[in-house]
Image 1 (tube, helix red, strand yellow):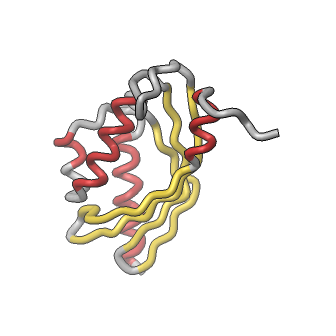
Image 2: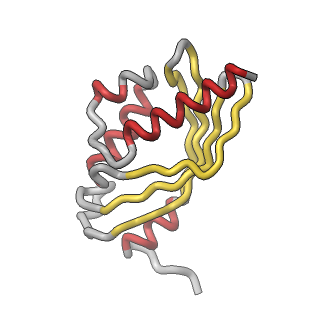
Length: 127
């Protein structure tokens, strides 16, 4: 039980370190060896500089921590060919982290991309 709490606390420290701050590779490497996660963060940081993430719910089992969370940012850089809209967005996502030796070694993510596109104004809200 103690390890599960430590794993959750690690993810909270990680969220606090990157949320609302610049996310340089050196900072990310303190928390993860998952190159795909580092690339994912860099991709979103380029489009939404200093984006914030908020953990709404967190569960842990074994060496995994699953977080139901929210992403909040301002669209200031290109996103998959979409020029900056300067709109603020907030959308939910769920992410699972696998931890080993005090670092994130693998992740799995699902986000509400439709909500993001609607908020950016590139997709109409269904009637």
